[in-house]
Figure 1 (cartoon, rainbow, N blue to C red):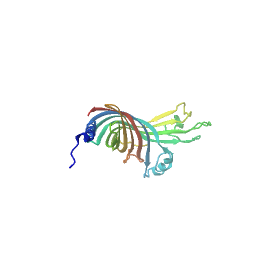
Figure 2 (cartoon, rainbow, N blue to C red; figure 1 turned 90 degrees about the vertical axis):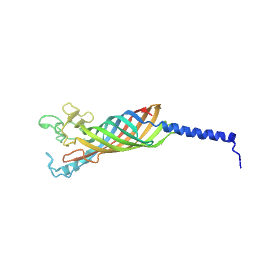
Figure 3 (spheres, one colour; figure 1 turned 120 degrees about the vertical axis):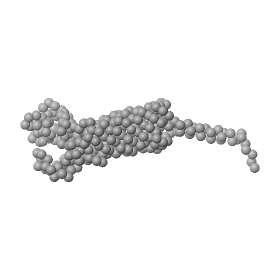
Figure 4 (cartoon, rainbow, N blue to C red; figure 1 turned 135 degrees about the vertical axis):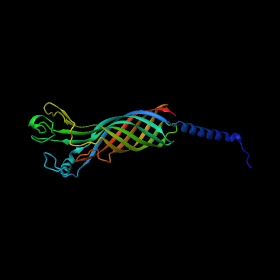
Length: 273
């Protein structure tokens, strides 16, 4: 039987112990509780549908035909949000991420190449010609109607650890969850495009939009997170999120289902390991 040679096996033992200790220390470095904040540029739009036979005033069409006629004019718009976060490690590979978010979702309707006596929106302009183009000049006349649903959201996300470097300098997660949304404000913002103005104004704001927003809404979210360990207890992170509202956020004749792509950019501070 070959004798155990401590001298020849010593390097192997040292290497094995180093790996075990290193893995143990890395496992212990998992953050238990963190707080953070982020800002979030957002691209948002909405799926709007109707099956109502009720007549839309001043059009002679029912809501179904009216919605179909304007759907090709609807597009996405850009907004901005902000969040504060609490992140708690419920296991070695799963974190719970929640907090408070200001979220601005909705859609844009474009009124392009307007001509004399074309209709715009009631309240754009004053007097008997409110909502009607009376400008006969050759100036390009276009208006962007921004329909905004502004929420205070409570996001609840489960973060699943996908990969990390051995020194935990970089971490990559997958996210999935829901958002509880409480309506702060719903408005229509009409912006004149380029140099076009109506009665000297380039913007009009309205509380009445033709939609009846619900006070509470629910959305689902999926995404991912990349974290960079800037200092011992400080991480910088980027978190792309896709969100969708499976239930209509409006209770009127037209149902509205907003969707959005948001990129959270911010900082996380580890409170406890």
